[in-house]
Image (cartoon, rainbow, N blue to C red; front, side):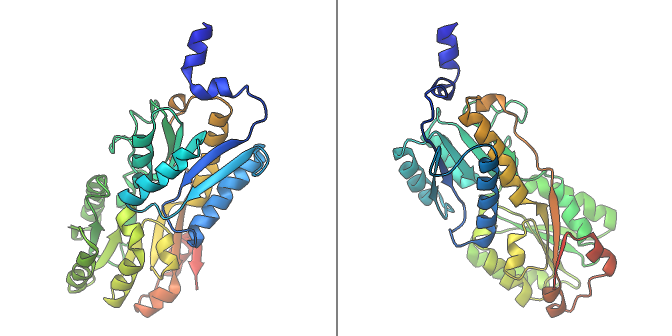
Length: 318
């Protein structure tokens, strides 16, 4: 029994070592200067503090920023592994992929991952298995919700990068069903390269009443300024899956409240650092969403957003 308990999970045995400083390595998908990322990480640190972890006392957090490509992910993960962390906190798929490749023993907690089962990161939501657990970024049915919110400015299109977001095809299916309900045309537009963004936007802009829905993934997040500028310059109303796009001038967004999301993730970091096995912690779905409208962009596009829609929003940017 003693042998079985010791082998169940490496951290469980180490939890009794006293008040040694624990080390958490963070693979952050955006640059350090990104304001939305800093709000999320502040919520993460605040939640850890409430659970008894004090940075500089019993906790050390090491960051690697702008983990937006496989090359940067491999390099950042290698640097963190050399620091011998007790846990890796991975934000987004490219970071999680690199972390899982680097270690099968150090616990990994993830955020901002859509369809973690479909992307083969875990075995199932209730029983993730292995050394990985975390918080899924959204349910795939959100594709229908995006089109519902754009119902007054349709037909809608769907722009995504299938190499970075394999789940986008599933989201698109929900969008197509919503389009049938509203009797509008819906078409997916795969984008494989940044150079494809402007031609796709120009094509969509030629359709009377056209609009665009931008699926959140690493590709669209990395090139969000290019996407927002292209949509606005072509006069296309756009719905985004993450509020980050609104800060760059996007029209509207509906998606997970990632500040809350990161705060929730800290609870799993706390539990694992205290000895729990990540394989026994079910992957959590988001519970808080936010709808944001940028009225300044709406006016520039000549769109009058009805008061009823503004009242639905969690935030209206004047």
